[in-house]
Amino acid sequence: MISLNGLKASVSVFVAALVLSGAGLTLGALAHDEQVELESAACTSQEGIPCTTMCGPNVVNEFKVGDERYTEMSQSRQINILSATSIDFTTPCISGSHAVSGGYIFLPEGSTIDMDEIRMTSQRFHNDPATQTGSWIVSIHRERSDNVDNCLNVEVRALCVR
Image (cartoon, rainbow, N blue to C red; front, side):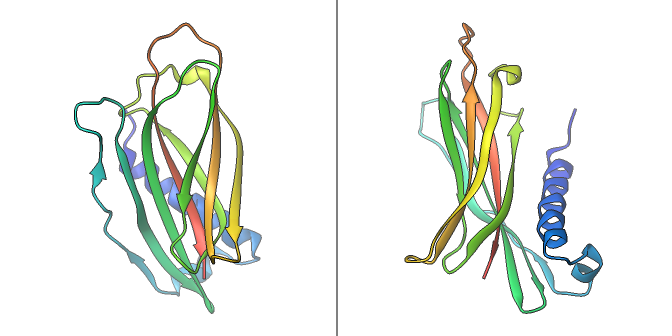
């Protein structure tokens, strides 16, 4: 059994470490700066329709390194993904921020699909200077299958800077 809270914390630290190491900073610098855990928003779903739960977007964490303020955003979504199809999962940044990194995790809780049929095909950021918004996008593909279980639960995180 995997603890999702521990797993989410690991993803959070990994994403922050990845961006900070790419910027020539270390996690040691992070310890001296302000770091605040923030509450998550409630989840919603379509009443009576299975596999429609969506949580977020939520601010998971905020911290400051030097003059830069980083915000970690999270959004999870259950969706029916049919055989031999692809879909994008997106987590937006807060207004005035742009995405610099991100990640994803397939959540076994709430998923009925065979995870061996699922592949992440790309991850990328999309930043729009005109609207000053950014997001992290993960593309998922399901292989051809005769399996009728189609529900996939995915969490996507974005590391945003402003």
